[in-house]
Image (cartoon, rainbow, N blue to C red; front, side, top):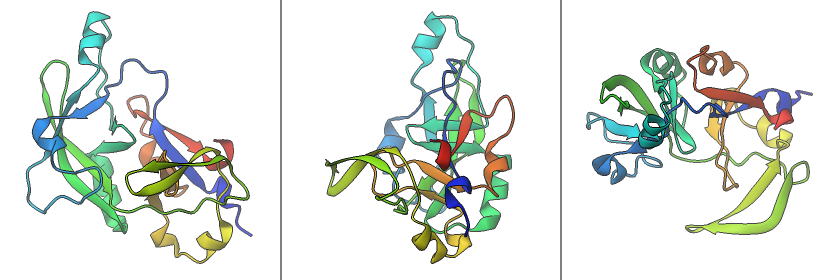
Length: 202
């Protein structure tokens, strides 16, 4: 039997690094429902700036522009990561051009935003620790989960290509998940900007 809890990682923003940006969409981008909907092919790039700019400048904190920049729970990646990701042709993942404007007003035009257009609810309620009171977000009733155990039967029944990279469903967190075979793509060194945590260690 495959131990799926040690096969998958959550991808999250690197913790406790005050030099990292907190991406925020500009006015035009914020109206495009980019967080949940694939953008039309050929449409203009999504544009982001650093919501932490004023705080970092006032505290004299030098901004690091990393390979992976998070916008809340989603993220954008540098072109070199995108070029590797597109070869997998993930279902329910849209990759669209993005621009990041740093604290010095430099435009970084080599980013690509990842939009997960659906969720994969594959956590096992009998193996996870969670609040049984559901939270209503929009039209959905979701759980607040403290620790995860995966649904092995569901994963066994799902082809690997369809569960390599996805956003966890059924929770308010909506954490992004990758299979261990993809983990090296999101571990790019000192300027990575992301932390990977095994689901068994979360």
